[in-house]
Image (cartoon, rainbow, N blue to C red; front, side, top):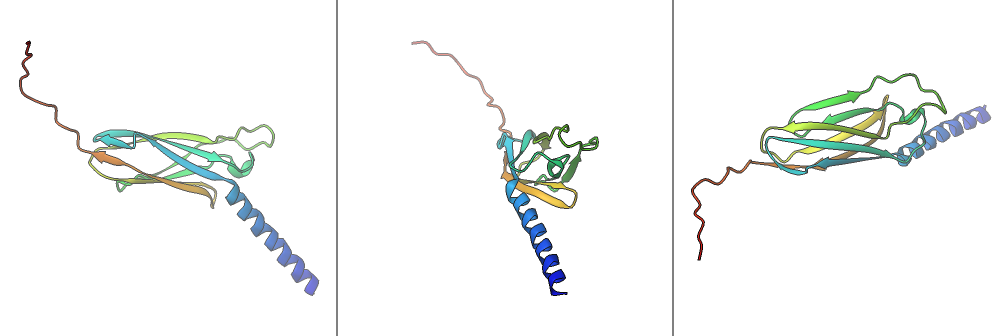
Length: 143
């Protein structure tokens, strides 16, 4: 009986270790351009997944966005079934979001596959007021 419990415990420990290794192996990086802009501004976001094996664990992830302006969204692609050795794993994702008002939003993305979080990252933005154009008359002077 003790042997069965020990084997089950080792199997559980092995599963936990593999899961932790997978999490450590995949990294999510978020970049934004521009990071400083005048409202209204459209900011382009690039997400990159690095590390981890090109397998089903990284295939067709869901991207959850917190835009920092009180809105959030979720991006999920319609993907054909995964075929080992044939399916291409997408590691770069691009989207954009429009900021209409002055703010200092912190934008966060969570990348997940099913119930498992592959990684998270965030970036801070500065969205300022659009400066009014200079008005008045200019006269050219010649010596």
